Amino acid sequence: MAYLLSAAALAFVLVAVSAQDSTPGQPKDGGPSGMFKVIGDSLVSGQQIFLGTNDKVYIIDKAENNPTRIGAHPAWGSEYTLGGNKARPMDLITNTFCAGGNVLGNGTWVNVGGNAEVMYGGENTVYQDGGGPYHDPDGSHSVRLLDPCDDGNCAWTLAANLTTRRWYPTVETLEDGSLLIVGGSHSSVFVNDASSTNPTYEFWPPRGAPVESQMLLSSLPANLYPLTFLLPSGKILLQANWKTAIVDYQTGIEKRLDDMPDAVRTYPASAGVVMLPLTPANNWTATVLFCGGANISSDQWKTDWNIAQNPASQSCVQLAPDVSPSYSAVDPLPEGRTMGNIIQLPNGKVLILNGAATGVAGNGNDSWAIGESYADHPLLHPVLYNPNAPAGSRWTKEGMSPSEIPRMYHSSAILLPDGSVFVAGSNPNYDYNVADNIPYKTEYRVEKFFPSYFNQWRPEPQGLPANLGYGGNSFDVGLPALGDMVGDVHNIKTAKAVVMRTGFSTHGQNMGQRMVELQVAYTMNENGSAILHCSQLPPNPAVFPPGPALLFIVVGDVPSVGKQIMVGSGKIGAQPVSDPAPLPNSFFPNTFVKADQGNSGAAARAAGWAMGAIGAVLGIVFV
Ligand SMILES: *[C@@H]1O[C@H](CO)[C@@H](O)[C@H](O)[C@H]1NC(C)=O
Ligand SMILES: *[C@@H]1O[C@H](CO)[C@@H](O)[C@H](O)[C@H]1NC(C)=O
Ligand SMILES: *[C@@H]1O[C@H](CO)[C@@H](O)[C@H](O)[C@H]1NC(C)=O
Ligand SMILES: *[C@@H]1O[C@H](CO)[C@@H](O)[C@H](O)[C@H]1NC(C)=O
Ligand SMILES: *[C@@H]1O[C@H](CO)[C@@H](O)[C@H](O)[C@H]1NC(C)=O
Ligand SMILES: *[C@@H]1O[C@H](CO)[C@@H](O)[C@H](O)[C@H]1NC(C)=O
Ligand SMILES: [Cu+2]
Image (cartoon, rainbow, N blue to C red; front, side, top):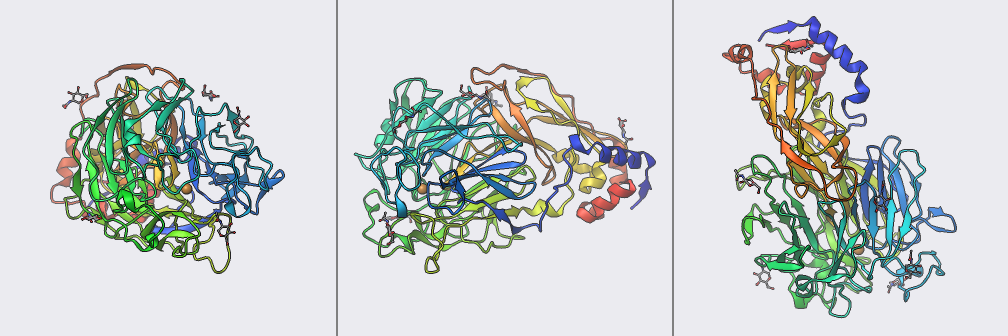
């Protein structure tokens, strides 16, 4: 193998270092790859979380007796600063107990619904106005708004109430950047029944009276937090209990697809559910993956048997609703899991963590409950799914170690810009509870999980845009000294640009989570640097609805640090769309092809962080 010390490459590295502000560099706060690390205290329990800015995660709990106070009452919200690993309490005003949320096309986050005011011990009141011990007025039809900020000065505000009360609603961002708010219940229940259910959807900003859904009416009782996905067709995949439909919310027409096989996936069975990456290779066709949950029939959702020891389902199925009405089985989970949080990673793989091997979501004072938990046998080990691996070998635990913290009911997880996963919550209790005899206490510890790429040198893309639209001109991203950074210049052929929304995480769902791969071409330079030519998003906002997102460049299996960008016009309303400009043909110089003969480049390929770092410092180019 020949090493060539290149003065030009060295100069380039020095320039790159001084221009670090605009280029995502290496993660500032890396950790051991495949492992969890406790990073801080969330102050309130992380029942609902979302990434607001590059540096802030917003945390929403239910109203309960958290020792952290704000004003005259306990706090049930906080803002977590990733940079300093410190949280500040925030006032959520009304009771956010099991609310839903998502982001508008203009960047404002919305948290909707919740429950009535509570008394000590989590006892429900009849709807009240905040006179109880926690000063948490009825939140069941609240609309709470937040414009995330980095200066520590933003606050939640209340907008006009929803038309109806919604406990456990789902919120989906539509292609015009407005929100669809789906289902829930009018009152405090474990699962819905005919008298509690709110079998309707409505919009925000409001578009009048709620619309009744036959699908929600026919999916009792396990239809709280119904599963929704905006499809590239502009229609909504709606899945609840054993039923499935495509809903055209413009006309109210619902088309039935096949029933869900094997297990209930909705709350409280709580499978991990995610839309797999929409890519040029699959023509941006949606496939939704459902993993785990519980095989509980509609007449078994009573608390007169020991649900906490019911084995969770191992079944994984997928559905491509625009292609076929039928589910197909894919590799089952290594072990049955309920309440798994499913996280789309920027390299296309899917991580599942948190949850339990037996039981379901929910809590109660039943004699068989574990403390108050309806689940038991926490699963501490994450599992990784590779949708592109051959059937039979898609799941792995390799290179990953377990957490020490059970994450049971009311846990959450989201991807962060550095590619790590923020993990919070767990509180299967009526009220804040850290009593010694309670096995699953109210949990405030925040962890990060570091996927395998945390021991590899990360691509350092230059010139990432701050905005992306639908179609139009392409943009160029510089990739300096690719051979040094990622071990092999041939990796340029695998380079991807991916746009991700990390979503609003609660109850095992990340509402709005999705990943779109852009069309790309490359120009590899003889000196080892490269240009990645990238199209903007496909000219269809239903592929990726407008609003904030993260943009990553992935080379080989390794993502850069992501940059927060704005997708679309930055406004709610019809999004501008244009034909995509053609990309140049990809180019790879002959010199590399020749030099490669008789030189497998194995050492370079094997080079991890250390080799990349040495190469970067010395300006060595592998030829
Ligand atoms: C590498 O080559 C490209 C294309 O000729 C050039 O634009 C770039 O400046 C070069 N980079 C370095 C570090 O010499
Ligand atoms: C986004 O739109 C909503 C609804 O009109 C509005 O309440 C909010 O203030 C807007 N946010 C921004 C940042 O303009
Ligand atoms: C559950 O039991 C606890 C402990 O006895 C009590 O404080 C609480 O009020 C009960 N909650 C409900 C909703 O029954
Ligand atoms: C929402 O409804 C509650 C009653 O549940 C009422 O007290 C409150 O004033 C309403 N809020 C707004 C902003 O209209
Ligand atoms: C689910 O449970 C039913 C009995 O309630 C059983 O007939 C069926 O085989 C089970 N399905 C699976 C996939 O285990
Ligand atoms: C890709 O999808 C678009 C939009 O649905 C369709 O018009 C086009 O024919 C598809 N292309 C291929 C190659 O299937
Ligand atoms: Cu809940």
